[in-house]
Length: 453
Image 1 (cartoon, rainbow, N blue to C red):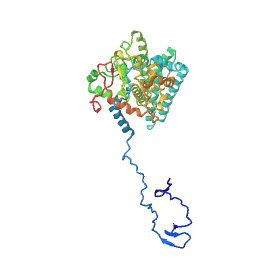
Image 2: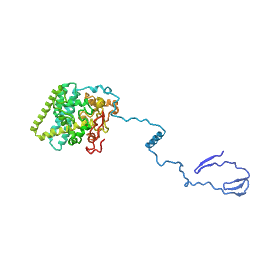
Image 3: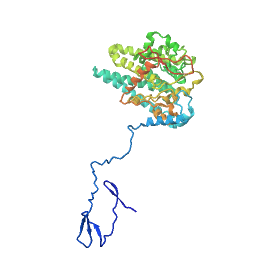
Image 4: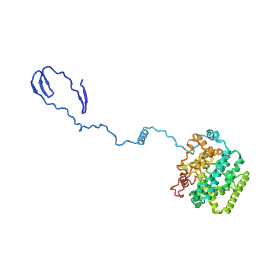
């Protein structure tokens, strides 16, 4: 059997080993024939050694390769086309529909929330009142003492935010989440709300209506969508004030006196259809407190002068109103996905509450008492504000995709929400006059919107 060796030029057979004979002719290493045991030499044929030019040899592997490697997406598309040609169909999962009835109920959410989250601590609630009142008077004293035009803008922003914080605590009194003592809630609520020119009982009752009908296209009380017929009937000025920033952010005082478009009544009028007969005494009390505060401000205007009063109270009040309208609007509008509004049998307390939105306000979260944690608050307004974050985290597994994580504020202040609300003013204009599940549509004539959707 031949033996082979691997050389630098390829495979070649190994020369056989033959014993050297004692007599006869043999081939010497000099290519001459020699006769053994003699001195005779016969010239033999010339043998050329095996030569291999290493430089000229091609060492590349003889393997073919494609000019371009297909991407994963292209390969998947090719597989899908092949499977389709072969009659193989992939299972398609339906997209999440936020307007579909949820697979859970209020009892499921309630069971997921820790029991201590329902406990109201009046001492803890009062500590927040003391904190905020000290901050309000401290800011006013510092601004009046410095009286510098470099300081006043900072004061206005800070004090307006603190007015808004006072409103939120009064809002908790109205819900009964401040304490279990209704008299304490009423006294504290009147002091806080009257100080910022809000009629406590009037607003409390209308806000209760808002919670009872949240997400209803017609019965919701604040910032509900306009039906298309009503929207088309608005004059140009009203449309501009309703859908052009910053005018909608100044709507709260107007709302207190005349409510939203399409609704009638006043928060100061005991005979308004907002209230039932046994609530009229409450409305008179709140209106009297509101009038007393207004009279106090007029008196302060004579004492310190109207300009100083405007700087100390007037401008912060405007900032407070803008905070209130901004937060109230964004908790029910402006999500990047269109959210449903309901009518008729499609509406339920749970489905309406699930259309509300949580918002992140950066450093302001703590200052305005976590009012941005709004979904749980709307479903269970009796939970104190200092338990809302924990309750929300506990309920998230139940909510699933029905809970929409808020965009986190990249900065200490929630500047990212400015773009959210401006975009909503440009696109969220009206809903269909008919249908039990409706979505916002866009009018192309407002704010340069490109088309009607």
